[in-house]
Image 1 (cartoon, rainbow, N blue to C red):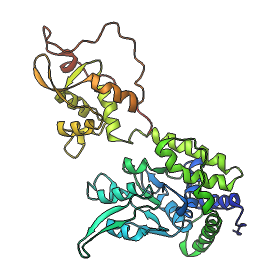
Image 2: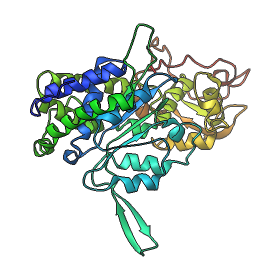
Image 3: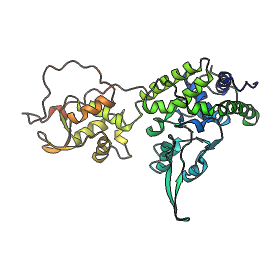
Image 4: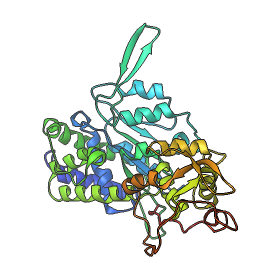
Length: 397
């Protein structure tokens, strides 16, 4: 691998792209371009207002996530890699002016379902550190004074399964998959291959450090909005600086991977709950809390039967829905329920429209939906005797 002229950013990125594809099979060309641009952006952290996260996730072992993190470590600026570090240690490692690139392997052991809430401080650090000038304030009892601790730093996390939604919402998400028999890569040996990769990192650093002022004032035209635009802006600024076909490739990668992220049905427990509640309501105008929970837990494809370990409860349901302004009320139903706590459909209508994909097309109703009321014969057939209505279609995992 011969070095490239420092001013030829496109050639330097092309070289990094070749390194990535030599050692790792990534899921798509867009993913490869995104990782190359993210690694390059680590060399210009002082220029950025936002520090995008890189999430490398896989459904199973042996999908190449740790190997990709090896290559990212070897080519990023000032990498600080760890498998298990205390939050205090990470805080102290960040510094203020030119932070390291935080690399967290086996992140599923930190944020996975078995981790519980023991690592909320680390999650808070990673969330706050996405934006510059969001320090943590701590009281130093030994020195009897308040300390302001910087949090801003680019970070990559690798693990099995999804990371917390608050982290993935600030991240470039790469979904790794296991190689097939006809997909081959070169073996990676740190002692043998490391120097060549650090040589590529040095070329990235010389090129981008010489252009920090230009990058700091860059205002690239973004194909995305809101937080997604904040996350991808450093990568698009690097692509624009490189020129050649990288500006188009960077924007295409941003749109493609963001669309995949937005289509992930596991992106938020609360959004998933909204979708599942819509299916559980069917055509009802109101539903008792106990019946809603029963229907939610009855579907084996949802997480609600085991949610929180013991399954979804009325308290957990209320906590999740309260974020959307939805609360239970005392509602009078027909026998056998009578007046009990329940939810009204009207309270869900606006959140369904804002946060959920459209429901499947159904035949137009020929009669207005009526509120539940006592009826002759078996009580509440719409709740107690009929099977649950068909579920909504879901986004791809």
